[in-house]
Length: 251
Image (cartoon, rainbow, N blue to C red; front, side, top):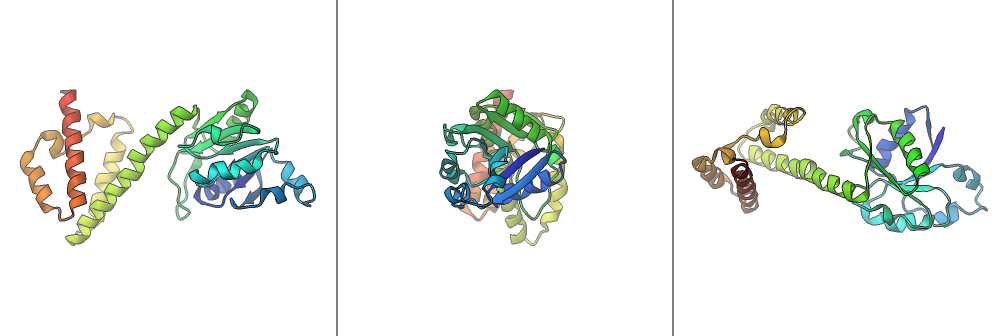
């Protein structure tokens, strides 16, 4: 049985707790607030010290800019210390401890449950034994476990920002346009679903459609004229130009 302590109480922590609770091979023995006074918690004078000392892995699930500060309090803890960030190097964990990364590649909200078995978990460790430990931990909750270094993980996170965060922002803009014109955004949902489904079997470049790919200048000009918000026009124009140039290169 792998014993885990999670540091942090945000979205990632919440979903990791749920996933581990369904595994027979992982026991989350404590969840600590990211702002804890760890020097006090790990003092041998603390009656819970022995309980905390039993942990095999400490998972730091805090915001990216807090990882270095929080993990810095673990310098005297001879355990495997990992963070859950896609964009932060393994070296944010102090050299004095066993360093690792346990990055679940998914968007998390407490209001929505996820199937962890389908979520890629990207792991990294400095020592082979620690890598094997993280493999066992990841496989306890996911069928998709990948070893990668910090450079690869950062590139993956950058790609994730484009396909998730930026795409969701475009959904927001589309929703605003619908609301301004008294049209239900629900009408677009089958289109969104089909667009996402296509890339399960095809490359994104091969399924591109729309006026930019067709070089349909009249439609593009009409769309730009319809947009009342300057920032929306800029986004439309930039994406249109990028699509046109991409498919000109392909031809």
